[in-house]
Amino acid sequence: MAVPSASSSCSRKWCARATGSTRRSTPRCLIAPPLPRPDLRRINVPVGPVAVFGASNFPLAFSVAGGDTASALAAGCPVIVKGHPAHPGTGELVARAIAAAVASSGLPAGVFSYLPGDTNDLGGALVATRAYRRSALPARAAAASR
Image (tube, rainbow, N blue to C red; front, side, top):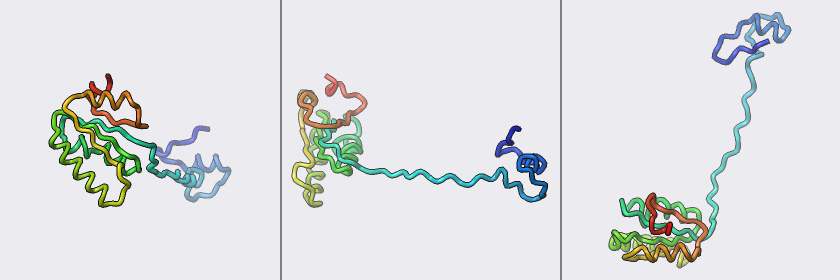
């Protein structure tokens, strides 16, 4: 016998046939107990040093102090940021602000490092060393993929 869907109306006749009851009450055969909710938890687990390669667009949002840097620091990972050569001055100012925040919050020295550079050679050298566990690359990371 087909069970009516939750959107269709349940006839008392069907319920009586399914349960063998002749009572004319609310059909309990279609009311299922609620399922237990899954236990979902988000835990930030440090994985080790993270290399962040700065983007050329939006230097304040996506570069030195972007979401990748903030997420890695929040998880407890040390961060190595390679600044983009298109905006070395902005990257240096933001890196100094982050370094001051790291020092004032009591985090260990060296948890944040900034690597400025006028070319992409430093980024290529960082990729070649593999001194980090994870990396965050901008959408166009030609220098990092070499």
